[in-house]
Amino acid sequence: MENRLASVVENKGWFRLSRFGGALRYQWLRRRRLAVFLLAVMAAVQIVDLGLAFLGVLETTVTPVQSDFSVALLLIFCCSFPVAKSETTFLLRFGTPRTSVWLSNLLSLFLTGAVYLVLSALLNAVFAVPGVLLAQAGKNVTMAVPAPLGEYLLGGLLSTLKELPMQLLWILEYAAIFYFVACCLRRWKIPTILVLVGVPALLFTLLLLPAINEASAMLESGGQNELVALMLKFISWLQKAAKFVGENWQTIQGVAGGVTLVLGYLVMRGTRQPE
Image 1 (cartoon, rainbow, N blue to C red):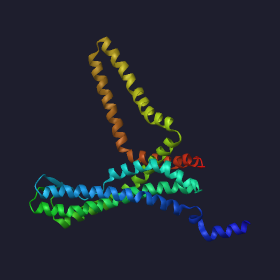
Image 2: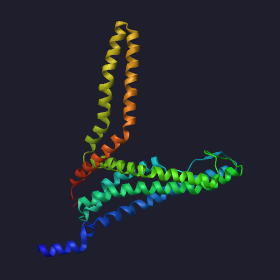
Image 3: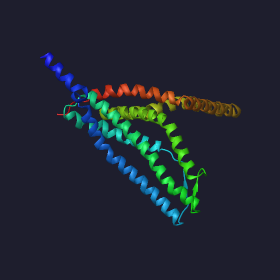
Image 4: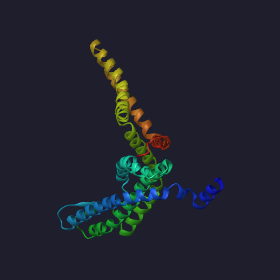
């Protein structure tokens, strides 16, 4: 029996036995319509904007060719909740292993953000061509960086390609973070909301309450100069904290992405098999 199973596994391989390909295909079918819809909306907005500028109704500016990274993050954030809930339930109902479901979920979120990132850059490059031509024709279109059409497009595309690897890494990190939060909300909705809202509020209270008490004591004793010194000291501390977070944000984000990548699997692994 063991030899027969070994031959089956060897012939078919993990990819087929785990149903990973089918799970990923299901995720792709769910995502492609949303990506096409968002790109169609972007194209419609660009067409209306350039059309009104051509008719002289309003003025517009042609920005450098770049990808819409913020919209890509918003997209994977919104997709992470149905992925962690209804789509996971659908895949588990047909006996798909949890490892394959977890991996296909994360990969689908990453690919959704990555595909949208690349297509948004290409779409902006396509509509930059009529925008530059209208600006050169003296219509109500201005260029953020005045340059010939070829140089304008080439410079923007090269800049986008230079930033793309780091942006893809960020999308992977945020996909892991958003997926972990979505899995926690599915299993422990109230505790997760309390943690997401309560921990920042508690930290802020613990930071601010001593300063308020000390300021009240100074006002009662009439030490206005000491109060001003305390406020300046508090503002200086906030600036140092903000500077530290800003300088080390990529490290913090990377550590959070790595930790939530593992925790997301552990939380998802405990999902009950639908009956």
